[in-house]
Image: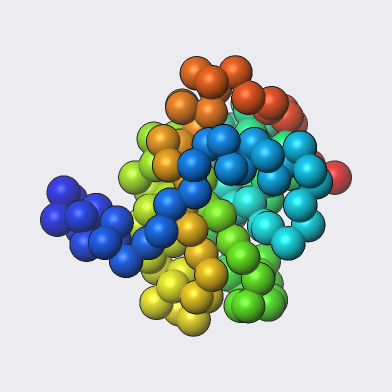
Length: 121
């Protein structure tokens, strides 16, 4: 697992918590935030505007969930590991502008940045 993570991290750029917070506050529509945790974790608290696509369903639902591979996408998970793997997978699938959230949702909560709960409209 450590080797897979190291290989994925070498391929994937990261976005800082501060940059994502600024983009959320600016309502940046050029960035798609993709939460790759399970539904329960997502509904208990996620980045405002984030879309849910659990890592286990990524390959099956990616074309439906992300029809435009040219969009800038940020993946996030609890600690930043699963989202790094998801970002690497998306890059391999032809999504060149994918980044992962540095530190994950745990760091986002520790920083007391805004959270939405439940489902997004």
